[in-house]
Image (tube, rainbow, N blue to C red; front, side, top):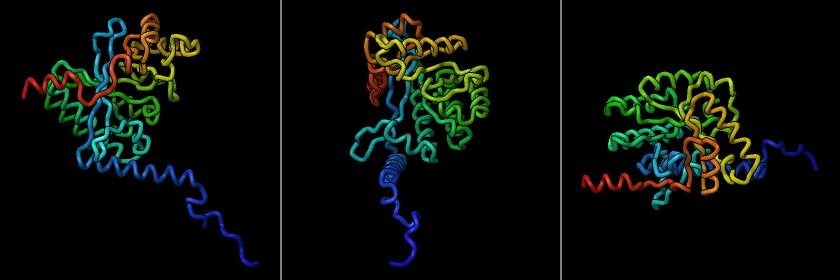
Length: 278
């Protein structure tokens, strides 16, 4: 038999690395689904309450979590599509939609305080900036009820740009939350420059904290950092009464999780308002 063996680059992708090919194909399908949802305006915010640890009947603010609806009306959570779109321009369109919906809800509900998630990649994106400026201009003092949540990993992509952006927005009264704290690789030295208003401790440290000694120590350390920099500290993923009671005793400011309400695209407080104005 003569001739040279086939080069590795000549092998079809599906044969060379079937798993990578499958993941890539899944990402393409996810991006197509999200793009179709954006074009058809099938995006919603699902609202979840963040309550005071000292009195869980009092809501400090609502978090608006972006959701995609497929053509059958099935609600798809962000964890199922954001990893695929985050680094693409379509991820910026998702941020634009979330901000637009959030600002609209704030304009309808004068007593609502709402947090909306965004990526640091959307800073300076013209459409996102335009939506923010128009929303601030349209509804007086709306910035004082808007919280922008940036994940720890996203903030660390371009910390200097994030810091300048925060300073500009905070002049409009907008607050900032550092989301999923502890899940990324934050350089602690930036805390002196960032001036986040709210610190949200990642749920991996919160689940079963009432009986997990490691999580108790780690959460206490993260809480101490937040208190040192005068941030309101929120525990994410609170799912049991035992965990809530432990966090309250620990000195946590606010709690968020299924124990106090699952995210919903049809919150009672909005439904009541719609019925009153119908």
